[in-house]
Length: 332
Image (tube, rainbow, N blue to C red; front, side, top):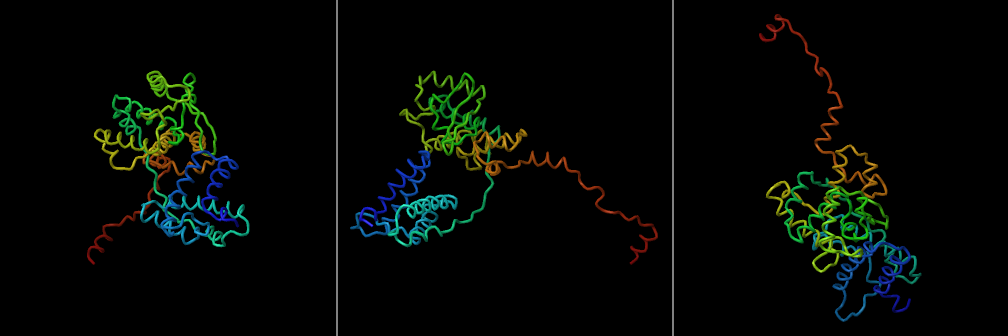
């Protein structure tokens, strides 16, 4: 193995630029997720190397260093088990690529990384907002440029049930306000069209007219005209929550993220007796089983279901006792 092909950075560049982007043609969002994993991993690996070292050899990647990296994610960075498992999945995908393309001179320890297990974790109940809470968030948006954009952000998330990445990637050309629909691109570059409420169409028309946005412009830009980032969207949402909690205190008792609206849309449809298979198509889930994690039975639904089940009749058999029997028992 040459000096160049023995470097970790050389293989990482090939993996990200050639394998993922060209050969597999994955979405930019997927490439970014892998990039973030290896950015954190390289920073961790550099801490274990001598200061005079200029390059990281491929042999640095071992089961022990990967386990140390995963432990740091949980203990120092405070990442959840789900995030830890996602990072491990990215590393294992890279290792499989190395084993397929690297040849017989690869470090023998690489193959053992594939044996590192994913951690089991508790599947928590996914929170959601009811209609009154969504309306409180919308009412809290101030009548400013930022407030109008944030109003549209919440409205689009709740109307479409789309992923935050799908909403932030929207361009003006993706809107068809004449027919009241938008085109979003989801995971695996799969496209789907989603209908819009009348109020959503009206707000979008006003927004586009007031800002004179061209077809290539992002629908939800930041002050610089660039697409709003995920971190920016989360920050703006928290600002709305702080304003709305005065009117709706329940908003301050939970963690609300952009993804919460995806769950909220699914729950609103479930309460409206929309079949789970249809909800899955609306959300862009390839497998309807994935939708089961998004829907939780509310007390309203549970009461509705319980009302269809008859309670047992006369669960106890009462024994009629005569006066003589009672006097006998009382006299004991």
